[in-house]
Length: 139
Image (cartoon, rainbow, N blue to C red; front, side, top):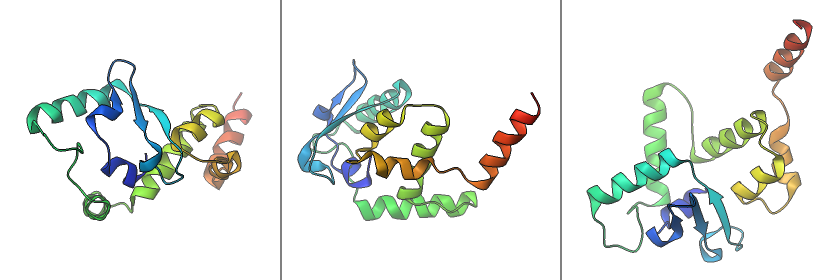
């Protein structure tokens, strides 16, 4: 999910039993709504957070896009890595493709209008090419 979509997330957008989050058109960058799959562990964390916060606000998280950027920068520096919300999104896409999630499912999950946008992420890094060839040679 994009940072702006995350900051506008509401409890009613989450289907805990079916494990989906609905992103309404007005909250998406493209102006098109979509439904994304969410792992059970993430939903459990959201439930725990909601119990702790007992929020009555419209949005689940009272945070701005800028604040999320600041937090990711802060903790990535502590971890000794470079990260932004977009690099985390990019990493999710690349790992999903490497784990053989169908590209059309990834496209739908991340909200790309065109498949070619998602295909850009399928270009392998030189290290991945080397690893793939080394695997074949060892068989």
